[in-house]
Image 1 (cartoon, rainbow, N blue to C red):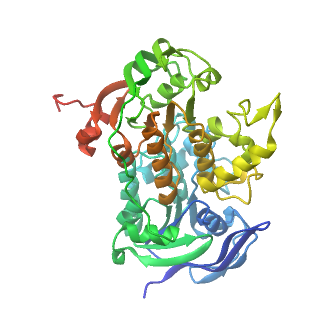
Image 2 (cartoon, rainbow, N blue to C red):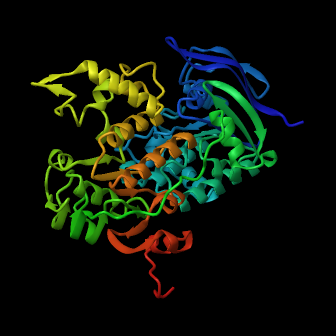
Length: 507
């Protein structure tokens, strides 16, 4: 019988009256990749934060490597050999990679040997095929590179148990393959990985066992090689059968709603980000925007939604020139925007859910009259949106910052889709969402399309793009590499275009 590296017994964690984890028992074997699966708000991250010492008050006990332990802060967890890569990275952008790695480590020497630390870090990077310049500033790194820094930082501190919280949420398909290679290498060394995720395909591919949490309690622990298919895991996660394919009728085009002609824009660094981009979207269709993160998608969206001024070219919404218009002016054209960074562009954390729901529409009829907000109607409507989009919260008076990341996303998506726009610009609409919420949001986007909305959907999830889009535009280095209709789009064709290779190009 396999030996457990960790046993969490009867763990209960409360936040006031909210019970996030209730009588949870989790056993993780040495040398396995163990998935922790559950809906948004099911208590996955909370449970792991208890294990990592982020929360020091909870009921129950933890056995690590056969011995009872009380882990009351992350330093204690690290000393035991537990490392955690959080969903939102814990790196200081203005410091170098190696400064982030050694930050907080005790050293008996009076002078910090950064060169020696950098040499050891570089050797670790070579060993696990994660080479990163130790002297680069974190703010200069891509998201995928920052994640590698977090993993290497944990390995630098001799982690025997590595917790990865939603590690693939912001990675490209190629980066995900690389991460899984690393996880396999760690497992082969006898290290253990806890993989927090709600991506069923990835769990089926990389994990040995899976513990499913539902509403803060353990629903089941299963061996992946005994699971029939991902539908089985989905049903355990949400408590019912889930339709894993989004129904979509043929599109009914009803006139051009967005026109982009010869658009050019610069990045924040003053470098070319969008180059001579031209396309249009009709009402009644979904145009997917595909590409590796950092190839101009963000700048393109920002130009269209009034958050960035283009250097040249034209943007027309509903036939009206909106080139260089402000975000408020664009939104007045009946445009909804699900932003890529909900914290920066989509919500205000200290405001409650009701206040976040009305951020765009507070001046409209029903919401206000003669300058006074109609809180009675706003409250009722907010309760309806919370219910419709399954935002897990005690009530709509809860501050948005207290919601889990997935529930914050559902709040933002619900607000934007509720406005019944003529143009919907949706950037990573299902990022961080579990399968049940993902399929609901996707069905709502398709419903908008069927009601005549023009949908521009940016995503790095190829399966999502190929399933929902009527046409797919691929961006590479700010350029339009081509547009494929849904029936022509394959992972191979899209992957080649994402790498900058068109049909007929020389190898």
